[in-house]
Every structure is written in structure tokens, then in C-alpha cells.
Length: 332
Image (cartoon, rainbow, N blue to C red; front, side):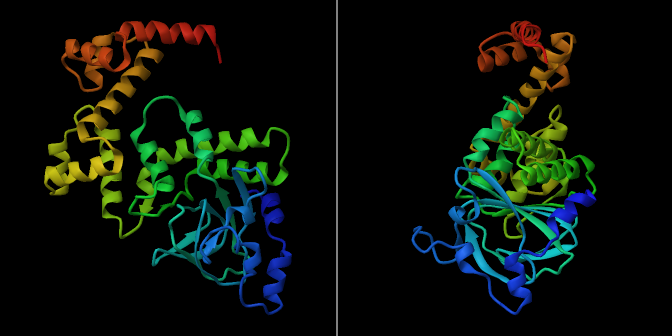
């Protein structure tokens, strides 16, 4: 992390000074609203986000135990320096420098006191923010992306947090540094910059799903992630039977959990991945269509053509021509 940024985040705040002077409990007026209709232990977005903002940021308050609470917004914590200990849904998580912890609105969180050199940043995000960010992440269907976002925004997910151990991933560290800097400085176009940066952050996190930790109580969430990782990596040869054998599970159970969590079955998820890959190859390469079909797992070219037309309403060749025309008309 940039030294200047650390210096900006390190000063003792007025709130923290009160705790150093002997106050042993948080100032509830800074976090909770009596008349908001919220429960007494729900941190209210009206208190922690500035008016009109879909996303806001504040350094994590040190020197005090933050008791169990929920939020009426999505929160993620970035560990700038040192470490902090969080208990989320009764599971202890120690955030170390460079780690990211995402919490949905239903996570029950408790935070142990942090020391002077334990610097973390809390980002508060209203769910509507993702409606703005997702289109920036591409128009194509991406089941893995959609599932990760649903973990943060849906009410019926079993797991309430995603913990990314990404301290060694330089692009993600750079994006977090940029996001913090943008939000501290609040310069012109900062809102657009923040939206684009969070979109880029999610795109990069999707490339490192092997570094995601989910709730120990969320067996189904972990299984769905495993299926989506498997499809993402092995889409040409992937099959539900092969995955079930690897996991020593029955196909029915996997299918039920997939449908319940994503709204799609294995075949539909695999088809989406294969066709997304085919569209990318059609628009960015001059490879023969038969070769593209084979490379994404369809050795029957006629079937690929019929499927493609049924899904996209045009032939692969027509899609390629339209994409190239669009690229020529709207150069980057």
C-alpha cells in the first residue's frame, strides 16, 4: 500500500480518541437509527453513507470491541495494514494485510478491538450499486459472476460472507489502492471512477475463485462454487457425471442444489459457458466456425449452428459480421 495513503488513514479520529480516553463501548448514535424501523442491532445505511451515495468508505474504528450487529447494506472490508479479527455467523476470520471480506445484509458480525497499526477500510454499498456496476462487467452471461453477486444481494443464500485471501494478487491490490485514493480525494468524475473500479475489482476476483473462502456452514454454497469453477476450467469436456464422480456424490443432489442456488441446471450452465466462449472467439478471431465449435465442446457443427441460432436469433457467421461491423463503427 502506498505510504501516503497509509498516512492519510492512520490518524486517530475523534471517535477513536474517546476510546483511548477510556470509553469502552461504541457510540451507538453514529451507527444505529432509533426511528428507521431497523432492529436495535442493525447498522443503518442512513448513518454511515452520505446522502445520495450508493457507496461510501470510512476507516475501521480501532481500540474498541464492536458487538454483534447486522447491516441494511452490503459491506466489504479491506485490510490495509496489520490484522483484525471478525466473528461472522459464529465463525472467526482473521483478516491480514491485503485480504478482502464481503458481508451481505444478513451476516451477523462482531469485531474484536484493533490496535493503532491495524488499519482497515470499510466500504458500505447499497444493493442498487450492483445494478450500475454489473453492466460494466460485460453483457455476456457469466454464471460465476452472477452467483458471487447473488451471495451478496439475495436473501435466501445460506452463506452470508465471501472471504478473499488475495494479498498476493497485485492487480487486486492496485485496484483497492486506486479505489481508496479516489474516495478519499473525491475529485471530478469520482462516482464514475468508483463504479468502474469496483467492476474491475469483481472481474479480477472472478479470476481467483480458488482464493475464495465461504462459511463453514454453507456446504451448498461451496458446492455451487466448485461446480462453476469446474465448468469455467473444463467447459470443453465437462460433464455432470464426471463432476459427481470426482466429488463422490449422486447426480440428483448436485442438480437440486444447482437449480435452487442458480436457477439453472448443469446442462444450462455448461451451455452458457460454451456459447459465451464461442461468441468471444467469433468476435475476436478469424478461426473457422467449425474449429470454434469443436474448441468449445461441440464436435457436431450442425448442432452448434442450430443451438446458436436458437439462443441468439442469428447464425454464428451473422453474429461475427455484426460484431466486426460494430467494432468498426465504434472503435475503442
